Length: 328
Image (tube, rainbow, N blue to C red; front, side, top):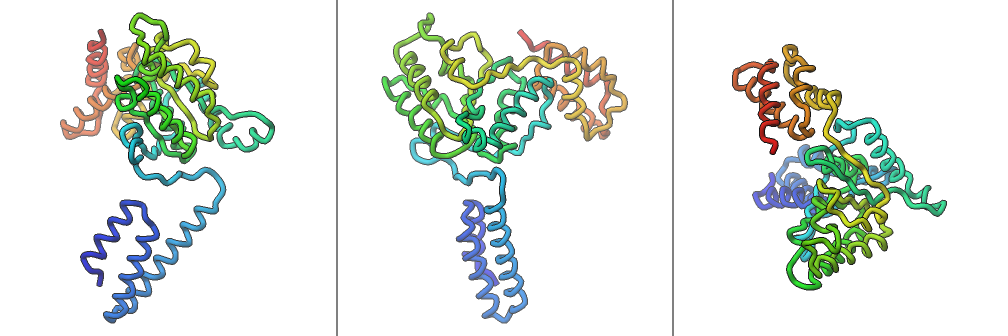
């Protein structure tokens, strides 16, 4: 049977995504089992490895978008990017119809980007997302990555922006080299920290140079990656940024209809027969999608702690009102 070192090697290679090493160790285990008289087990293990290889080969040759395997960024990029493979889908989001349609259009153009480029045009891929916090901007980046089977890279602005002259622009170049080299969805969250207006009261020479560098890099970028800037403070952005993006998507606080949809989705696994949705929607007024979700989670946990799955109307309304009371 497998030795301790072989078991550890199997786990390590699986965790690192090293399929070649994983299969090799598995075949070593099979060979050792055969030598020890466990012929049936050895044959079954070999067949499992062969089937796994065939499935991997078929997946690699199948049409359609595929995730790009990439370990955590290394070297200088390690402090600039984090990476994940979201499973989020656009259908998971509660947004108004117009915004859904605009996001769907981005997906259509991305899925047919080769056809679009054959005719001399470029697909939508540089997006600016603006609106209040908690309204779905970051989730949109995750949904685009999930729908397209791409990694989501989030740029860490605290690692990107430094006080040393020229260093931030150099790091920015590394990020755009990664954008060019590895297809993915690249999210610049809290984008106003990087794209603030030049000539403002708090403007300093280094930030102006950084913004100029960003504008140049963004304009020259012709990669297959999606570049997304997201901000809660659109008025702080330099006007020159807007024409560098292919589309500006505006997010707003949810209507009563959308708020109800958010609540129904989050409480879908519990008994909501006692909930008066009109009362809850009224209590959710002026709250963001994220705040409504947090209030639903509070009401759900209250029900669970009371050893029931039934959400009480008064507790949901109270949780929503408590969220509103925290607003400045």
